[in-house]
Image 1: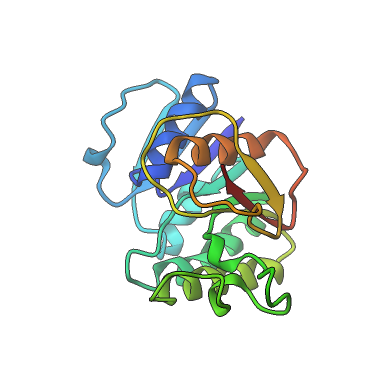
Image 2: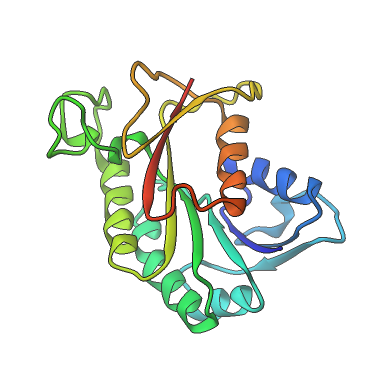
Length: 206
């Protein structure tokens, strides 16, 4: 399978690179600073570029089967601004499947079902700025024709790969407090082979 990975130099993205290459997929990583990727593998193509640049995205999308976005908010609006650019390029290339990393803040609240977690008392975060960015991306994807899945981890320590965790469509598993970066990356990667959570958010926690 030919996979385009966005955010490949981040904590989750770099782990996803490892999983995809272990299974011998052909991976294209669009990154601003190629030297941050120290993996040398014949199945890995590194393209220097910016997700906000239509030409860079178009070039990276060529011949791709599935897109995985592990872009984070980084205190900017890159996440929400890049999604329309990504969607347009995918539609032009006829690519349907995108898996993105979100945040547990955009899952439904159990205490206030009409609200998202970050809008309710369930969220312990003082700042809602990152969740608002992810919320914009969720709204943009909902309006698209793509087969999207948003993986929504709760607190994300680096930690070890445990290999056992709970997932729930649209909600955070009850009592879920954390999920490690490697387990989040593994679950996200596994979504390329399944349509179980198409057009859904997925909460993930131990």
